[in-house]
View (cartoon, rainbow, N blue to C red):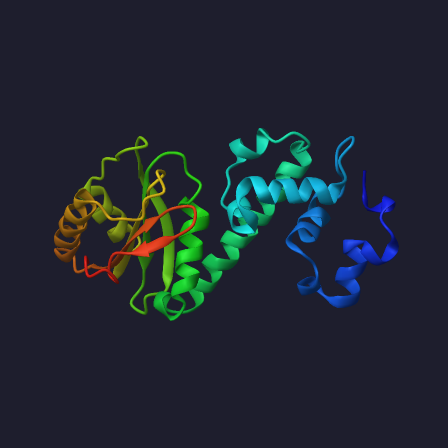
Length: 224
């Protein structure tokens, strides 16, 4: 069941071209990507069900390839298209962070980290390596762990910072549980990494705790 069954004035493609993308609802924009529904379910209905299931556009952007495979009506082509949109969003945010100092656009930092880490089912520790102007050089996932903990080796973080000739870093890790509260272990790790990186003249600017819905700055909490 596709757009052909809709009256012309209700077709998302025509509405977008006539009035601009801002005139479309979330479901209509997603329906343009999906193009067709499944038997007994119009594409707009399928789009709305996906948004409801994943918690809106942000939740859908932060979902994983594994989760998309479980949705009836999303074949490989539709999965690939949705994942391509997510990757384009990641790359657009990364480009923005490379072209201006990181903290000139703090929301871009949060959005980028949520896209990178928010949907991970296991805990991941990552670093954003920055130059002297605090623009992004590289983002790397350095360590992976279980749902509850991950092992982070300061020596490896120092090695990667030297490899990128970084002047500063922003640390980040996700909490798959959804809790945004930094743990005592998070605070201890931050202090350890600050001390290790200071020996090679690399500053730790912040440490973010990332969930599907938030990226919380430990610096803003006074913990860095």
